[in-house]
Image (cartoon, rainbow, N blue to C red; front, top):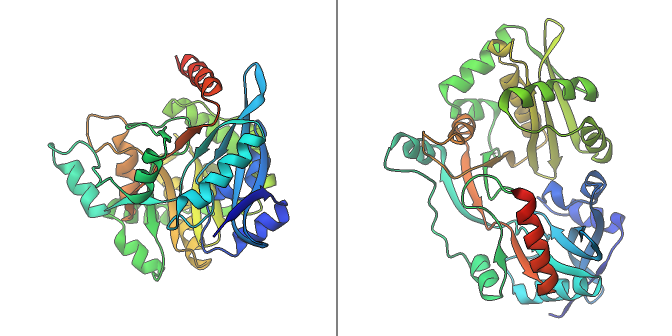
Length: 358
């Protein structure tokens, strides 16, 4: 099979995505409209005249060398990762270099390890266990290493790109009762408490109200919030994005954003009130999103990033402790990898990024 790569229309890209059971929301044409600081294009892989693969490429120029770009395919591309990777990746690299890319960054949507909720809980309870430890040595990772690709995912914590470790709740073949019974007692109690307190969850459009609560959450939890324009753009550009709003006695107490592509649903952002945490608005939002994902026939409800730490002394462990309460599973992906197409420019870009992080 001799594959070729060329630009395709957003319509052809979207049609290809819709024919798949599951594709990352980061690989649909609409995501390019969200990332306004990047230039985006849709690419297709052809076997003769038949479209057999697709990918969203985000281009970022090099400071002071705008003619060159980093070509980034987050959680992509959508190709047959079980096949001969040379046949898929080589024409991609050739096309992007001809378009002025100095490097390609991929995030293969390929899993390497899965840990059940019971395994995660046992690891947290064992003082000798400090982190999730996988087998390693999967076929895609070996190919990337042998082909000269450079790993970009940090071993601990979150980096600039997409998380390598995520937490997900399998939904396929399960009912609401099944999912509830799989949750820990605290999660079930909080969901019941929210209902008893009269918390009402609806899907709405009040982006400013969400953002005000999100900024409050950022101040409390000490992270840098995104501007309101980002969320306005996200909800306008992505037809599958929904804003969930939890009210208690007329007051907004929690809000979340959900995206669903095919059989996969993602919890993207959340915000909550400090003064009314005891009415459990966040759990009410989560349960509403899970129920809607079940009703839509989703296979997976994705709670997004975690770190591999199981160490109770690590500040990040609270994130996995919260998510493990759903009864789901921790998953490790191949991670993000760079391939320099123009090594001198790539080294200059790498140096610039390292200086910016200081």
